Image (cartoon, rainbow, N blue to C red; front, top):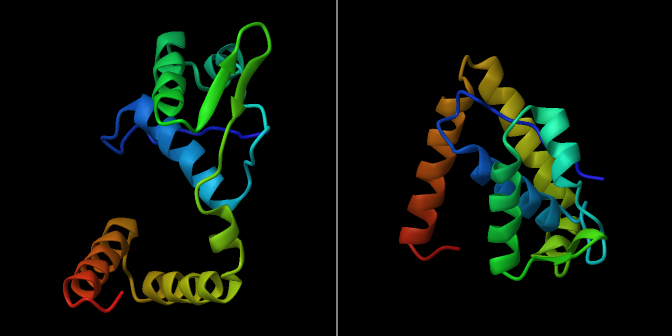
Length: 130
């Protein structure tokens, strides 16, 4: 089952953090069609947030066709988004892990790394390389 976490200092709304975490789990293949998401009550108890926040996140995921709510049973994953593609790229993940360690050793913090990565992504897509 998915364990949500919050970064209260990120500036990203709580419901969007929940949505992003579900999407990330779908991309990585840790959530698959048929899997059950934690109940709103479980998320509220774990994170000390308003139940409406969880329901808003689940409604957004349902609107996108990623999950479906079954009254009395829970919320279930309806479809995946890229898990199979990402699962086959362990070598790329290993290279990214090494890059993050190297960047951290060079004194970069998370924001510095995210900025460099975003810059590299933007340049690559702008050049039509990827």
